[in-house]
Length: 130
Image (cartoon, rainbow, N blue to C red; front, side, top):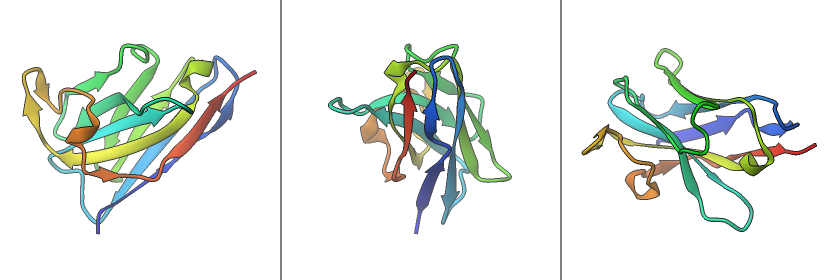
């Protein structure tokens, strides 16, 4: 059974950093797209970043470009989201999701759409406040 488990959430002050982890069990990330999504209270879930396990494609929402970095450690079967310069607007529950590799104009795993992903973790909360 495929399982994704997120960890690394917490509370930080504006300008701080966190690193989220998404560990997969039941399968390996070989030839997969893995994405991070977030849902703030009262808002719809939105895509934050995505990566293709075969490399080097990565994609980011405009609001996190230059601040967040998604990466994959194949040996540990874990995807990370390094979040720097956190802002109150980043407060949300963060979810990782995985899907067999898909392609569209723009490249492997292009786009940050929920409907592309079939396996989801339970989420980890991130709170940014002073």
